[in-house]
Length: 362
Ligand code: MRU
Image (cartoon, rainbow, N blue to C red):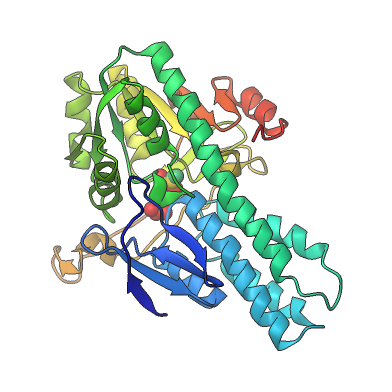
């Protein structure tokens, strides 16, 4: 893979670009110290970047995978225009298994597989697949803008102007096609004067909050203060938090939410302290095939992410560690789930079924 350094568009953080017939991803492993883009010319390179978290965040993983499908089809068709589908299917399996929890990954592959099914034998699939991948990318951005507006209206309807909110991990432009889910709502509500500042959980062990959320909010001049994950209870107890606002990697039909490890704990704390919890996610994150969170596959990553910090050993050599990187927040700890098709409240099972049967408005 070749890499080049590039700035970020003014007041507009982006992490995914298709140009010169290749996929470019902003390398999220090295932010904020280095702003480095990596080009991807093969599906194997895209699989590697999803696994090692060059790209991360459920919608961004789905978009990157969609472009990965295009790269696979190109190579397989060039190798054998009549029999390209067999190798392509193998690539789809590898891509689908690159990270297990974010359902957007399989959702995007399924959408592009539907497009493939319409391609005639011998016909080059690349342009039809690229059009579909670009559509997924653009719709995600549009969904984020819609969720920003809907979520900000919810906050306006229920809170005094000038509150502080807490977020966890990074559910921003870096994790999506742009603007962000949780950070999209925060951007919109800040622009309305509803939110005066954001507490960002550092999000051990990968530090998405410290490295990515703080950087991203600083780019757009949204006031942000970093706190260690263990400070959340104290900040809630002293009345400094109006809402906990987070994204999601997978939401089941009953409203259970898989998100970055630590989200469940925050929701328990929020209920105890009377703080409201908002989950912001596009309908592409809703998995109607699963009734509840029990069946969501929870990714476990290498123990070294816990025993080391940015490559430096912090626990004694040989220390055992467990590293589940997502948890499941039960629906009964959530006040509202904001999607691009509207805000859903308890009973979630009914509300989610209703929005999933609606057409997209954009
Ligand atoms: O391991 P990550 O960084 O991919 O986890 C990301 C999260 O948990 C996000 O909160 C979630 O994907 C929502 S992103 C809009």
